[in-house]
Length: 547
Image (tube, rainbow, N blue to C red):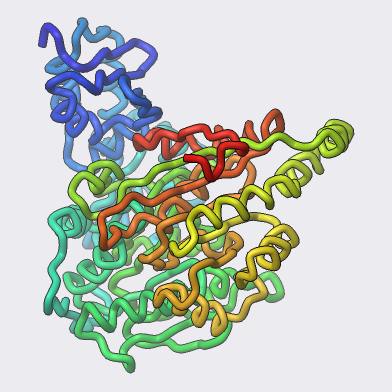
């Protein structure tokens, strides 16, 4: 294409001209193998990474299709070295295959003898393997299937897993599509997951990830373990499954700090599974003892280390990861790939918004000046205290009051990191505060009052970042956050993205102290949403209420 929408560069970046007539078509094709890095107004930036290319191979794309896409849409000749590098990187996936052998059980087989030799001489891998069968095959200890996949990925030789899955205990589950039906992208996400056997589905907050989980369960027709972030989320999952499927109260168990029920469909919290006693995880062992046919990981980007270790032992079970963003601040995306499975479906937030399934959002950064005495205290503070000092300024609280007054009568959330700050704002606004010590019963009561409109303002700590369904929320004011956490920013905006009955946009404010770490961290936090196409307007605090 002589004047294509892409500029493909030798540093493995791809630039997409958004206003080009072929931009939409090109974006859909490159999204299958390139990672979006930035999405400002006119030129979007993608990067080719080994993980992205291996994800594409796992989804059925080969190097020829990737190269053809780049050659088709590139405005200038694609650097030859890059074409070679893509082909060689993608060819690494699948040269090692995990398979079931009738005589020897689980085996690692290669189509490339030197690759197997390299792997066999890696010190960390040797203890996971059994005897050598022939030049291309070696026995693998079945309990080490996950651990081996992790280590092979780190060596740069990701194994294709053909060892299959156990069926699990059969259990009838059907979708009850009375008055509703799966959206086209939810059907496609479920089909792609099932065709691949295990993997991750990435959908924006508010786009119905729970329904993808329910559809996977209806396809599986087996006992299912669902892992969630907290007890409120567990109960929301249960409520949704009762409403959307044939499952009854007696078939769904909750396994949390408060209740320990193991039933055909069991919803467990990450916290209870990672509870440690005497160096052991007693609840992990209990749940591992059941013959699950499917395991669903809600908010898979949050998986704690013990759950990764548990998952390494569960490679014979089908695994579905659900998330709005695969961003992990600890860089462990590779472990999600190797242990849960590759990305099977990924829908850009703006695509789902364009289809009308999530609300548009207006993101506004409100910048405040610290008073002179607070600026001096900040300047003289130890590095460890600076962020708290600028995040919890009294000036911010006054701005929050004005913003709340501006949106009087709307369903509004005030979200923050520091409990003493949230308590103080709750007192100012005469609004309840939901934090870690708030009982599950009280949280549910307050959330329900908010949904019903009896309560217009809720002040919430980071306990409300995840899996809280508040479709009526239309305004959020973020007063402080977890340093530069991109996924937290995405989750907080996600609280607002359920479509509004009157079609209006959601409003997401972030109150930021100018010339401090707060401003620096805000820029980092916004990066993922900027990559998704959200632009932040800058508003000076003095202009609040005059828009």
